[in-house]
Image (tube, rainbow, N blue to C red; front, side, top):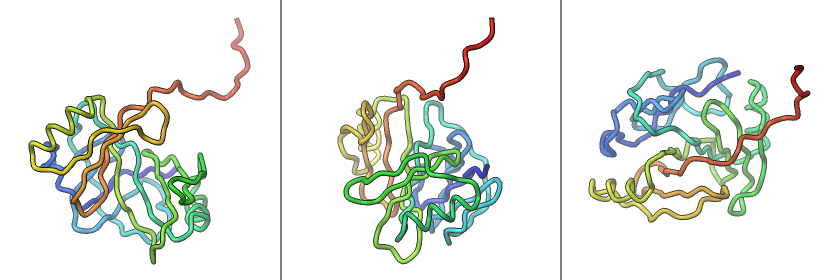
Length: 188
């Protein structure tokens, strides 16, 4: 199964107190002028630029929740992702836009939008730290950060950073119990 291992964004991670190459689980976040990505295994043919793979420095308590991809057609993008073995885990309408979610290491949130070509729009991090603390710290560093608010996912909260060249959000952890498929009872 292909895994998204590097995401390049026009975000200076060091301006947020992170290492310049931030390792968040299986995905390394790096700074670059244009959004791009690198994959382990076959990359989906969405026309998104490739970047070099990187390994970063972990930041304790931080991870990548999801990467937002804008596309003119969710159905077309789903077909291209399916061609490399990535199938939608969920499809729904979010804020009036057709959206599909794929597990590729981090979640890919593919959103239908009036764009000419698919593009990485932004990234949502997840932290164990209180969102209020994150907002205060980042504001003290000069960033425009919204107050934490309820996220679309029940029981979760989110804040966003404004004024960047790419979308950046931070979410509280998903504390919902994991979903399990029905399995036969174990033998004694």
